[in-house]
Image: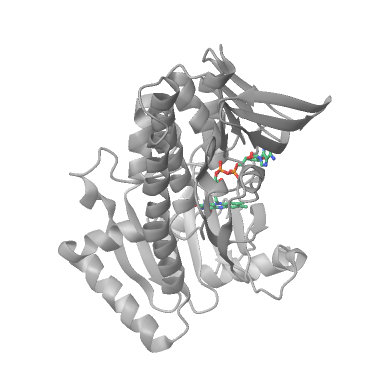
Length: 390
Ligand SMILES: Cc1cc2nc3c(=O)[nH]c(=O)nc-3n(C[C@H](O)[C@H](O)[C@H](O)COP(=O)(O)OP(=O)(O)OC[C@H]3O[C@@H](n4cnc5c(N)ncnc54)[C@H](O)[C@@H]3O)c2cc1C
């Protein structure tokens, strides 16, 4: 194997592993360098959209996800005071996709499936406990320096893909700007075994409120009946310790669905949320994808889906470049397609979704919710709304 044919992928998260699998499946040698000593298993994204299920199908992943995930065929928009505003049917997409639903499955159950498949591939290597610190490039290839348990180690390849998340070292080494903004409030993700379905909640429900807006989702966990996950913004002045305390969480969950006994909390996490897009997704032989290239708030579940779409779009093109079937100009098309889609759709839609849930002006809120109610009752109006918040 020649070094120039090889691709190094920095980051063994969902985007990095999918990049590696698609390249390896097309006979491109790959090396994944992951900073942690094992796959990251914390609570993060949990829904796969129809286009994502479509692009991953040829790799045999979609079928495996369908075996353990929850297909969600409708979602609700609710208001804390008024109750259900409308129910939106994803079956409206029946004639457009073989997967007319959002598939709920924890991100940390997806990555082991991809890793297992990747490890069976010839020319695929995954190295844990390898934290990349520096990258340089010349016209022939890239040199990646990583801190390993044995000290600093050098790796050479033809190309490097940074799939190393929002704080991307690869993006920084490539000198790519990452403009945008950070929301003052952090978001909490809380999961509980308490069944909200018995109170009429759909498996995906968005609950509008000027301060205490919330989204709830049923996730499969280790099998039926699964866990219910709450996602909401925390008071910006609250410390992390207070925001994640039993009493604060109890108060928030009770305000969404009161019940006589306390909620039992299975997971709790809090994180900062940003809206940012990298100035470019390529600097010569250095490419970036997923959270390394763009960040958005989670209302609508675009982060993971967009990253997985990046992974497939980029690696389909890189395969052709590595096999000398196309010039490397093709990689600029990746940048144009995926960066434009992110700026024009994902950034806009995720900000609009958040505003819809948290609108503080009562008359604007009522008018927007009325529009949504009308849309849910009229299939000719419903389609764009059905897709918006999924
Ligand atoms: C706490 C949290 C909760 C979230 N919740 C939701 C949600 O509810 N809904 C939603 O849609 N999205 C959510 N997201 C966003 C979603 O999880 C991301 O969009 C998705 O993980 C992006 O995948 P990725 O592979 O690009 O990056 P990551 O998943 O961040 O993976 C990056 C990988 O790179 C590794 N890495 C980093 N630096 C280096 C280095 N220097 N060298 C080697 N390896 C490195 C990391 O260890 C990590 O494994 C959440 C994100 C966070 C942080």
